[in-house]
Length: 522
Ligand code: 6LW
Image (tube, rainbow, N blue to C red):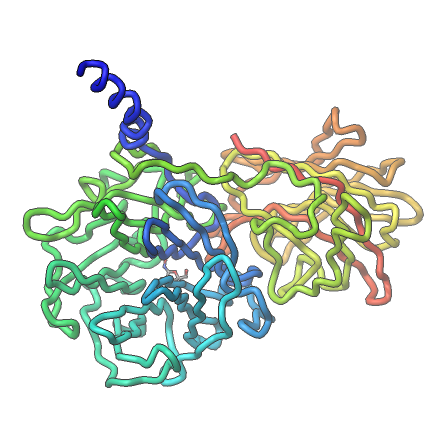
């Protein structure tokens, strides 16, 4: 008998260990704003807003809400969304994903039109439908869907939180628009979601605006249209307090709730990690916290309404997912899902087949200084300390054209270590763009067209370096991180480490070949 108990213990040990493990926040580091989550069976799916980046709305899959793998994206075709002319203040705003009767729905808003639309699929890793537009109202943002008793409700944030019934097959309005509870008076009540539990309708929103004052509040009603009674312990999530003023995580808000197969409840939300001086460059990231319901049937987030980097809590059985590779040798037929482009890219200017094992970027006169779709691919900066390196061949780059590596916060703010050919010489340049200022901080000539370019980041600076042998790196310049921060630039996105090529003339079809790209975090 004793042997049986010992055998059972060792069989269960991995599960006991995984349940007892905590986890590290953010669960989706780097620019992963406005998260929304749903569950289908034992699987969780999560989407984020993407503004001017293409493809729009990445879809992530998880078994434990901690480890996520991108499996696709909702908006992958120009017929779904026109991102022309968008930047970090427009394009695809907050998104919601919901699962109902074996179909997934993602609803969002396109700025500046402020038109709400949704797409659907039966396979979240595959193609999503063409958009169904909500055409009876335009305005503001943060739409969500709520399915109840065979009906579908559309909620969104206007000057207040609003709701009406729709025909989910057509998007047509089926009831009058009503106003719901809109918070405790905090600025920008937004990000509404409704949950039905134990005979209550719970309406959860964000207030305070998506900066330091951000927080989550909740109210409930026995009747969907209210009146709603606010939770006596609101805000249920906030770092806008003396206790949390020095937390490395700020701006927590815009949350979504989900119940796991084991009946536990969890919250995902957005927040940002500051470098200090209360500024951040990586955009708003996705965080996770456990939720329990108290004796009065109100949710309590992580025990006291705050979130830590190192979460010490019982988790779901942890199931690791493949991590995004540190190194890209460009030997695949398609770029990894973690690469983003800008607006509506011209895919003729990107090739993984023109030169085997290289990414060829064909420049156009649209530069990374402009709103539009320059020839650019970028990966999210996911940690404050990182090193991004690429091997570039500019032998086919024409005079006056540039190509290289950029820490891209916006078209108006980026730091680049780039190559330029001029008067028959190859120049390596540290190029700085801060608002109206465009400046070559330093340039040196090199006697080769194959160069290694590197950008490093830490708590204070971005460093721009180059090498001709990938052994000895020379620093060309260093620039304060703060001029790439959201607080400096505004907007809603985060720094991407990107590869780019741009030319002076339309007729100049010159290009740069990138042999590999490596992104290491510390
Ligand atoms: C989004 C609003 C917000 O629409 O920021 O953090 C806006 N919350 O809910 C853009 O992400």
